[in-house]
Every structure is written in C-alpha cells, then in structure tokens.
Image (cartoon, rainbow, N blue to C red; front, side, top):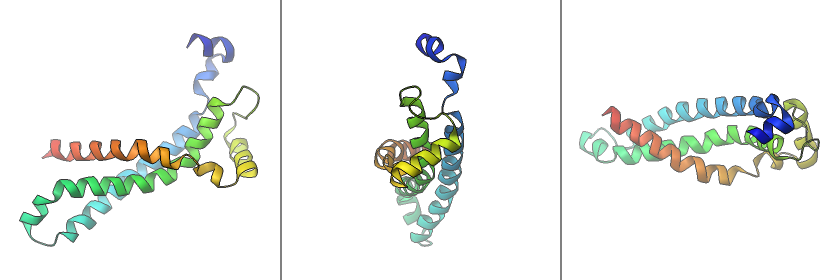
Length: 141
C-alpha cells in the first residue's frame, strides 16, 4: 500500500476499476442466469421420476454451475485481460484508459489478446463456482 501510494498516489488503487466492474457485472449476470437455465435443463434430463431427480441432483448442480461458468467467463475474459494489462504494465507503457486500452489490445493483438487468459480463468473459476453453487443449494435444502 505504501509503495502504491508513494509512486501512484490514491488513484493507483483504482487502476483497472472500470474493466473490473464491467467484466464482473457481465460474468455475474451470465453465471447466475445460465446456472438457473442449465439447472432446469439437467433436471428435465432426469425425467419425471422423483427418485432419479433426487439421486442426481447434486451432480446436476455441479454440471449446471460448470456450464454456466464456462459461458460467463467468455464475457469476463476480455475485461480481465484489459484490467491485468493496465495494472501490471510498467507505468507509462500502457494506458489506464479503458477505451484506449481496448483499442490498443485490439490493434496490437487482435481478439486473441482478449482471450489468451481464458484457460487459466476457467481453471480458477470453474471449481470455485461448482463449490459455491453446490454448497448454496445444499445449505438451502
């Protein structure tokens, strides 16, 4: 904290706030919306037998949350890439403007520049989301 305050001032703590806010808003919208959709799809795949539904319910929660997170991270990844670039580049070598940053990444790396971190994002977010939703559903029960 002292080093950031000394070198960048109070604004150093907000670097990347806009892409973070936009990205995690999109991700949250996708995650929760698609989770509910996939939950219904997988519940329907079990048919009308209540014993089968109950038997595979936890697996359905896990698969539904994983599927939802895969899609949600596609929404998040471009914004996360921009935020990381803004926060980790040497001062003065990359803009701290959201619009300029998007344009720069697009011009220098193309669409791949926005998605090169997708697999590590999935590796982090999918297990977390599975645990989060399965735990939530079990606690609700």
